[in-house]
Amino acid sequence: MSGTNGPGTSTPLADAHVHEGKEWVPRLLVLTAVTGVVDAISFLALGHVFTANMTGNVVFMAFDAAGAPGYSFVRSFVALVAFLAGGVIGGRMATKPAQRWPAQPFLLEAALFAAAAGVTFVKGRSVPSALIIVLVAVAMGIRNVTVRKLAVPDMNTTVLTLTVAGLAGDSSLAGGSNPRWARRSASVLAIFAGAAAGTVLVRQSLLVALAICAVVVGGVAASIRSLEPHVGTGT
Image (cartoon, rainbow, N blue to C red):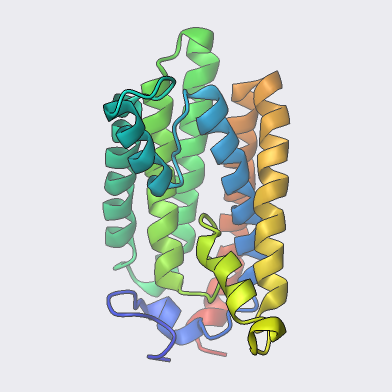
């Protein structure tokens, strides 16, 4: 199993469980679609910022610093710091006993989406966008670290650059054998579908978009809990 997880990514559950991670793929594809919704929420409703994609935020900070209109250094920086905080939380949670991981961090992600939806419900249009950015970016920081430590191949749930590179570089056109082409292609489609759905939802209601994220991620966490006894025994 040591070849599956990179340095610093090992956890009791991951070591006992992950190879190709086929039982994880449907769950992680659902989370990938949620990322598309989150990207739509953050970019369209929170002021040209990303809460799941930190490359975008660093670039947006540079745009603003160089004087490009329509971007905010402060909002992007807030998202980056909140994401880092979520990553620390996710890393700490990964040290817990196997029976509490990884369902627990996904439950916390769902709770943070629910909190963002709750704040939106209470404050309505007067809610500060920075508060929603913090809650969602912390949630996505937790998610990214958790998925990284699971180390299911080609299923990072948030970034498609390496996925698309793998599709091309490992294709038969490039002399490869098209490994895991189905999950790679499905990840691209999931982000696309999630972003499209998120765009429609945000136009109707930010509250509903956040609430749907909370419910879907909570459902994934519940389904992961059903995996844990099976996984923990290594059967």
